[in-house]
Image (cartoon, rainbow, N blue to C red; front, top):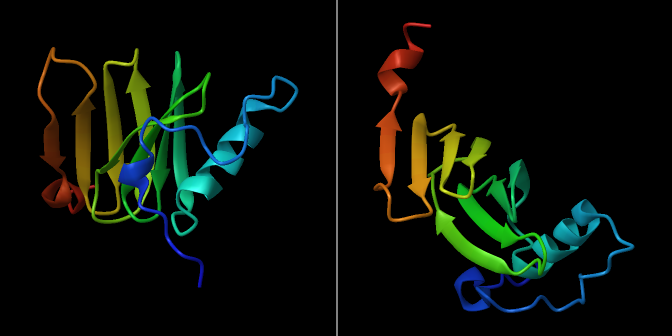
Length: 126
């Protein structure tokens, strides 16, 4: 079993490989970088916004990367189950959904607070 890396210690640090190679597609650099940070979290969803990429994982984490440096800007545990979708709004917020039946809104600015919407009761009505 591969040894898991503590993601929080890697925030703001350059990855082990030099990934800023303009000849490599952005997706290739991102996938290589994700393997450097946490080999046990499989990608479940991705959102791209100006300057940032948010990656949702099977374990419920969301990893926020800078697109130019490919540095990990912010990891956080958003959900208790697989992240099913992510949407970003002009680097101001990340909205995510999950199999834990919650919608999370993570503020990336001081304009508003983080929010959680529990949709479990609504799923039965659909």
